[in-house]
Length: 330
Image (spheres, rainbow, N blue to C red):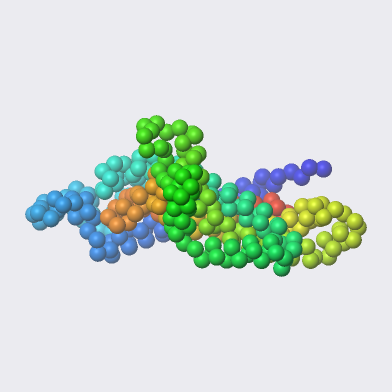
């Protein structure tokens, strides 16, 4: 009989997490404004650029008032928060454009890169983890584990530069960066797919070691359990034992990784986007941080925090679906 999905408990867990996320997001946004307040960087001079070097103090004070940075910290934070709740994220002082517009045109490309890389990491990590876990200590296990530990210590930007040198410069097989070909004025699916290969592979490979090690350990431990030994003793085929018994229980610990790897995925995506000139939110994040762009910095920080919270929720939901004993009401 087909098991029905527990929609009610899943909805209750999602609702509880959504309520718990509200104070977290409030605290994060306030912390952004507080850190920016204590920063030695002057947003007025960053906004004025070279003109600020020769501007009078009176003009700088007027610009400070126009930008609203002369008001108290709590006032600025509250005004930004109430406006954000209505969909108005303010204007970027550095880019001279609405924050929602800046994020809207970049977020989709960042999500495409991150999701593709995550799928690559999960697929390759699971496949290699199963192959290594079924015969721990064997040749495949030793070889792949050595590579995984090496990749675990390798920075994402170094992997990106290495991939550009080998695949783009030496082999000429893939483009070195950007979203489209240099001579192209239009964005096509074929060009985006070709330009996505290298950054997605680099970001996915940078996340692969953790998925591989978790699956390897889980599958190896599951194969040593009594139920699996009993299945083998009954004469079941090795594939049936592996996929029907060991793989399911061995995959459970990996599900908890999905939420915990989201912060690292975001950090790695920023580095990879910079190396490959991918038109995501990396450039906007760097500019917002270095120029103390309050509205843009707050919006990007809230976005990253929400992504982490959603990742944790997703991992718990998947774990509950994979193992009904855990449930969703705990």
